[in-house]
Length: 146
Image 1 (cartoon, rainbow, N blue to C red):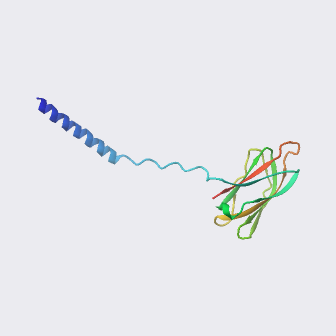
Image 2: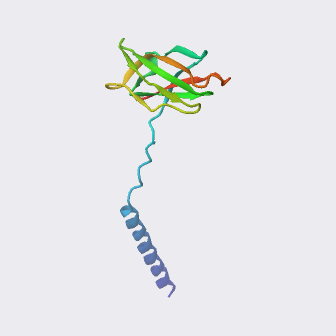
Image 3: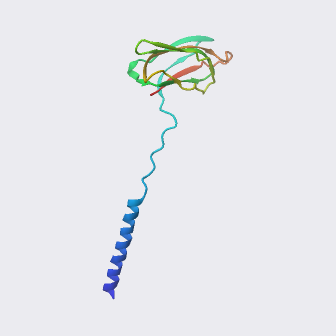
C-alpha cells in the first residue's frame, strides 16, 4: 500500500507540474512600459528681466544637442513676451512673434522648430515685466525637446 501511495504522489506531482508549465507557456506577455506623456526637456539656459522692459540673448551653442521644439518657463514673477528670435547653428535665424503673457510658474506651449532637429546657437528675447509693481525679478528658463 505504501508503494502505491508513493507512485500516486509522483503521478499527481507530475500532472500538477506539467499543467503549471503549460500555463506558463500560454500566459500573455507583460504589457510594454508606459510611454512618457511628454518628451524630456533639457535645460539650455536662463535670463532675467532686469528693468521694466528687456532684451536678452541666451547662448546655447552646438555642444548641447539638436532639438525639435523649445519651451519657455517663467519663475518668480509674470513676463509678457513680445518676440523670440532663434539663431540656429547653421547661421540662419527665425523670428517668432510670441506675444504671450506667462504667469510665474507657467510655461509656453512647445514652439516647434521647422524641419528636422536643429542646433540652437542662441535665443534672443524681447520681453517685459507683466506686473511692474512686483518686487520679484522675473526669470525665464529655456528648455529644448529632442
